Amino acid sequence: MAAFVGAAVFDGAAVREGVALVVEDGRVAALLPEPEVPGERVVLGGGVLAPGFIDLQVNGGGGVLLNDRPDADGIAAICAAHARLGTTGLMPTLITATPAVTRTAVAAGVAAAGVVPGFLGLHLEGPHLDVQRKGAHDPSLIRPMGQDDLSMLVEAARRLPALLITVAPESVTPGQVAALAAAGAIVSLGHSDTGLTGAEAMFAAGARVVTHLFNAMSQLGSREPGLVGAALDAPGVAAGLIADGVHVAPATMRAALAAKRGEDAIFLVTDAMPVAGTGLDGFTLGGRRILRRDGRLTLEDGTLAGADIDFPGAIRVLVREGVPLARALGMATVVPARVLGRGDLGRLAPGGPADFVWLDGGLALRGVWRAGRPV
Image (cartoon, rainbow, N blue to C red; front, side, top):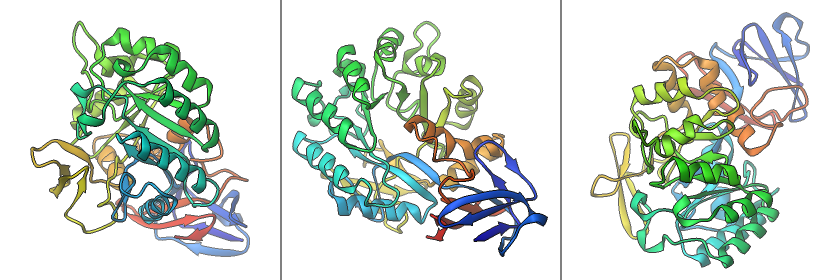
């Protein structure tokens, strides 16, 4: 048994002062007032302890891109790289790919389940998107969903720990979305030029997430709310946000956070690429060079291609813009856990896993623990 003292504790709901986190056998044993703590003490120098971060959109890390290494070893390398950045649970994300690569990645996810620490399931971002909002996705691989695709995805949803699928209403039908949701898949709308009516039809069919809000989608207008407006207005629909100050302007982030609260909330994603956790100055995506400069990842024409930020950095951006620390931390922990339906994650509660991070007073990452052991 060890008790971590000297830092505030965010338990998934509130930041609590004067509380010790007690860990035993890889689980949270208790949260106790510091004077009442028994046994060994680990004394921290201020800051805050929080649940390990949960990222539902991670394309790569540690020099590995899932599209290039769609196997269990690639998944393990990505999970290990992000654990060192404070993310103790994540969904490796496959960017628009061929049917063969998609099937290989799904098989790798099945093999990694229960074996690779931190692996929570797969996120398939494409290929069933709108080419008009392709972003950095290869337009030659974007296509409507066919029956074979649907059958494969339904089976994948049943075999994987979790399956998150980003689709555009232009490339799927409400019936397909309903079938995916019924199989247990989490259907997210993104890379779409749809209007409010198209988005609402997909929400009614079972879509309940929107991928990287504001990016690669129809925007909020005065007479056509677009996918942005649909996401902000729909109860029970969550939305991912890249809070690097590049993908979404700070004022826009503040407006979105004011509009959407509670369980139908906004959660953080990194949209990380292979450079995460490395000093690499770029990488190759589908034969195209991605440049890493000034906190941005772009194609040579300037198109954003993923993000160059980790969760501690995103939390610092939010707090600097006036977001309360508890909400910022919740956006990286309990809210994405809720999206996954994982009530056991994203919190520090007795009986739960002892996956946690220590951020100092400036919200820089100082330590990571998984199952009570330092990463």
